[in-house]
Structures are given as C-alpha cells and as structure tokens.
Image (cartoon, rainbow, N blue to C red):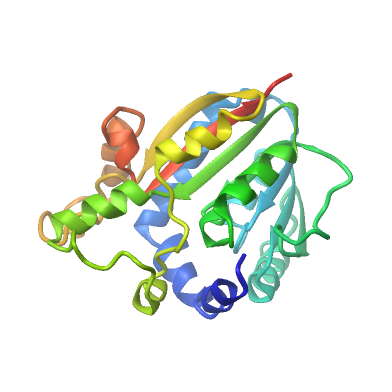
Length: 259
C-alpha cells in the first residue's frame, strides 16, 4: 500500500469497522463473498484449506473461513488492524486456526515459503500503490489448482454513480474528500481486472457484483423499508446476472490457477 494511502486508511479504522464491516452493506458483502466461494470453490466446503488473507482488516472473513475448518494466515499493513484482530480472537476464544502478521504485502521482503490453496484479496488491492501488481503477486501465491478470491472497488460503478448524481464532468482525480469517505484511489474496471487475470495460466470461475442496489441512489427507497435479509435476497437475485454483475459497488472474481 502506498505510504500516504496507508496513513489515511489507518486513521479511519473506526469508521471502516462501523460503516463497512458493521453495517448492512458489510453483512451483504460477507454473505455474497462466502456464497461465491461455496458454489465456485468446491474445496471450500469439502477440505481443510490453507488460506492467505491479504489485507484482512479486522478479520471478519478470516473468522468465517476458520469456522468452516480452514487454516488462515491474515496479513495486514495496519498495526491498528492487527492489534484489533488479535484482541478479537482472544475475546471470542480460539476460532479454528488463524495466524496474524503485520506486513506490507507489496514490500519485496514479503515472501512466503509455501503457496496457498486459497488466497483472499478483498478490498485491499485498490489501496495499494499498484493494484495490478498486487493482483499479479497474489496470483503467484496460489498453488497449482488453487483459487484466488479477488474483490475490487468498481471504477465503472463509480462513474455511473457520478452520472446519476449529476457529477459526471466533475474532476476525477482522487481528492482528500474522497479518501475521507473511504473511496479507494485504485478502483478498477471489471474488464481491466479480467485482462490482468487472462495473462496467467488459469481460468475465471465466477464474476459477481457485490452490492448492486443497496445505498446506490441518493433519493429513493429508504434503507429502512427493507430488512437486512430482504436486501440480501434482492442482491442475490441479480449479483451474477449481467448487466448488474458489472455494476456492483465491488467486483468479485474467483480465479483458479492451472493444475
């Protein structure tokens, strides 16, 4: 992660935990990510996997994986995030096998003695100095026949949202205000992500749009009209169906390395 972005991101740990992971949109995100893995990564439900969680944040998805019986190594460049996930593991008691390490994935010194059955790169590549380089490095961490679960903030969705809100011609350069609202500087088009992955031996197993409708329009149906369960049901109807799959807040792709 770029040092400036890392500093700004680390300062917003509380907001990230409350407004993303602890909210309805966070619940939708986690549920759809796990649904994709259950349906497109057969080993997720049938074997005990060795998982690398890059930029794992507060460890919510790592705990989901550990509860499924997997062994997880959570890596994060934020000291505060590592402190919090370590504390949460103590408070919640031992959950499966989760190890945590404070390290910047993009540093040359960040190397692993093994490749992993499943690599998670969820919402972190777009905060790094080179999202493409982060994706490439993550692919290299996947064992032969293993899987990469890649979640990236959708640049096309952001452009579409600007148009809906009458801001299509607004300056597109990253501003401090955008960083304050946790909009990452390295958002990517789904097409660009797919082009990167097709350069490497393997295949794309699935592509989903994570959070297509929830909180998309400034004016419209109030969030309180639907329960969290009803919101999730609506997202599940369309999250793999085009054109909706390409217009989610995030793009989720499961890629399998060639055996």
